Structures are given as C-alpha cells and as structure tokens.
Image (cartoon, rainbow over all chains, first blue to last red; front, side, top):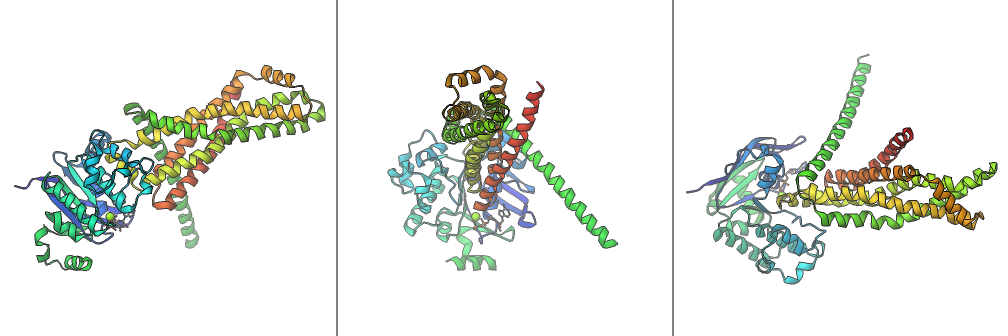
Length: 237
Length: 265
Ligand SMILES: Nc1ncnc2c1ncn2[C@@H]1O[C@H](COP(=O)(O)OP(=O)(O)OP(=O)(O)O)[C@@H](O)[C@H]1O
Ligand SMILES: [Mg+2]
C-alpha cells in the first residue's frame, strides 16, 4: 500500500513575468524513489526548492505528512521542517570557509566519517582540504555525503551524477540505490542521467511547461505515449 | 496639450515609484534589523565565530587604522601650526590635535577605512554564500544564518571599532607629538602634559560612541547587502559597492547627528 508523504497541490510560481510552475500537482510516496526529469530550465530545481521550503510558492499548497500548507509555518517550524531533508544542491553548496571535515560535521556530529567517505568513493586525505581545492565531481560527492549523513526523512538530490566520470557515476547510482532499496529512504532525484533513472527510480515525473506532463512507473517509461518525453529521453541517450 | 499631460503623468508615476521603493527598502532594512535582534535573543550564539570575526575586523585593521591616524596627527600639527603661528597661538597645537583626533578624526577615518576593508569583505563573503546556495544549505542543516553569519559579525563590529579608535587616538596624538617635538621645537614633556591636562573624558567617550555606531553601520550594511545579493558574480560585486557606499554615507550622517547630540550636552 503506497502512502503519500508529500502532496504538492496546484502550486504556481513565477518570477516577475516569467511563469515557471503552473498549477503543478505531484505526490511523493513514502519509501519510494521519484525521479524528476525535464529539459534544462523547466523548473526542476525550483520545484524541489519549493518542496523543501527554501522558496515560497505563489499559491496552492504543499503538505508534508501531518503538516498542511508548509508556507504557513512559523520561522521556527520552518527550520524544523527543513531539517527533515537531506539535500544535495545542484552546485553542491559546500561551505567554502570550512574544510571537508567541518562541512561534514555540520550534518552529523557523532558519526564517524570514514564509512561515508568510502561509500562515496573519496579518500581520507580529503578531510583536511577545503572545497575550493576539490574538483566539481569530488565536491558533488562530499555534498552527497553531507546529505546522507543527516539521516534525513527525505533525500533530495539535484543532479547527483552530473559532472562525474562513468565509473564514479555508476558507484554513486549504486550507493543511492542501496539507500533507496535497503534503507527505504524517500528520495526525490532531479536528473539528466537516464542510468540513474533505470538504476534506482521507482516512479518518474516529467516536467514541462510548468506542469508534470507524464507520471508513471520507471519500468514503463519506454511505453509512454507522451511525444515530448519520448523526444527528451531519446535526445539524451 | 494631452502630450504634456501624459508626460507629466509619467513623470509623477516615476517619482511615486522612486519614493515607494525608497520607503520599501527602508522597511526591508528595519525588518532585517528586527530579525537580527529577535534571533540574537532567542537562539544560539556562536562565540567562536564572533571571536574569529573580532580578530578579522578589529585586529587585522590595526595597521590601516594606525597608518591613517599617525599621518592625520602629523598633518594636523603642521596645518594648525601654519594657522596658529599667525597669531602666536602655537601653544594651543597639542590641544587642537588631541581634540580633533579623539572627537572627530580617529572615529570617522577608522570608520571609513574599515568600511572599505571589512564592510566590503563581509558583503562579498555573505553575498557569495547567498548566490552559491550556501546560505540555503545552512538553513537545511538546522543552522540559522542570522545566528551563524550575521549576528557575530555585527557584534564584532560594535565592539572592535571602539578599541581600534582608542589605538587610533593614541597613535594620532603621537603623530602630532612627533612633528611638534622634532620639527617645531616643542618641549616634549610640556606637549604631553598639555595634552593630558586638556583632554576630557567626554572627548574620548563621544569618539568611542561614534566608533561603536560606525562599527554597527559597517557590519550591518555589509551583512544586509550581502544577504540580499542576487544573480551571480555581478550581483555580489554590486552588493559590495552598495555596502561601502551606504555605510560611508551613513557614517558621515551619523557623525553629524552624534556630534550635535554631544554638543547640546
Ligand atoms: N531567481 C530567479 N529569477 C528569475 N527567474 C528564475 C530565477 N530562478 C529561476 N528562474 C527561472 O526559472 C526557470 C527554472 O529554473 P530551474 O533552476 O528550476 O531549472 P532546472 O529545471 O533546474 O534546470 P537545470 O536542469 O538546468 O538545472 C528557469 O527558466 C530560470 O530562468
Ligand atoms: Mg536545476
């Protein structure tokens, strides 16, 4: 039995006169892995930022478990709400005045860092380095480690494999798959990487023109009749 | 006739928008300030970060403030000699030097120097964190950016500026002393005694009050503009400019207001 965890209902979001999300509806189910795909600039990152509460939507509502419309939360409740999420930002967003050890301690003070480092394929020596001394791919993996270390209720990954070489990308995909399948963490992944989709997505949402144009099981993605999505998938494969 | 009317209408509309956005941004600044106060009272204080910023803003500004003060003291002695020697009042030079330095020049110059140095750095750092989503990341890591980034910086500014100004006072007086003793043949002991007997508590104190206010303005404006930076490197650059310009102007404005306040006392 699928249980709804996050309900996005009729949300609108525009900047000045640019409409990004247009009465968008989306349900995220507990312990499932949802992949959001769509062209660059279609609003995938904006949608996840709205879900996390970093960005206020114009109208509509987003509910999370028992919380009804997260826009109405007080400052304190909002902080509390955001801490339920572990987020890998599109550009990693590591704190660049702190070294990697301090960055990771931010997410979790108690856990040992050795295990998580080997899971994301990084050497110990990286701990004393600063984010600016790492490659983009390494930063991404530190960002992923930070998101996972929090032991979040919901994991949000904005393009976890972009900018990685195929071997590391595969390793990351397997790591996420493990989190999704074994630990049953609810996961929302924004991705351009169809390998990620095939590897660990349960469901897929295709975002275009401000709405979810197609939603369905990841296994059935190739049977879809939505022409723009077919084009999109073919285009990137 | 209608064209005249419509252009007048357009003009008044622009004017209205200008006034509106002016008051709107004042509202935003007040809002930001109230948030700072609220989170300062209700949430965690990061003492380590405060200490780091105190060293960055205070200790690291010592060379700059020292240099400006010593040259200002020296120039002050020379210039007042030019004037005072015309009516044989050279003996008043120590008094003029210490009065101008403590009441006016040390706080204002230190304020302007620190605004250029630390205010810009604060705006650039926080602005970069804003546009690269580091501030968003902080929020999702259960860390209030006001407590972690902004309040420690503002407090460091409020506390470190007066200390800088005390140092500046001493060095500035020393500058005047060096010129008077070495160049203008003043008696060293008399010069120092004159200075010491003449200066009053209120002179130094009013300078330190100014310094605290300037320290607040510099760090607050740096944080505010950084925190509201938008759109990449260009936005960060703009926020540094805004922060330096607005804090410099506010320093000069508040300098007048505080001076006239102490004038009435
Ligand atoms: N602060 C903003 N002001 C104005 N427009 C914005 C702003 N942020 C995003 N947009 C616009 O919203 C649209 C969606 O942006 P978003 O970052 O969500 O795209 P995306 O789907 O994540 O793309 P990508 O795959 O390239 O990351 C873009 O067209 C962008 O121009
Ligand atoms: Mg994006």
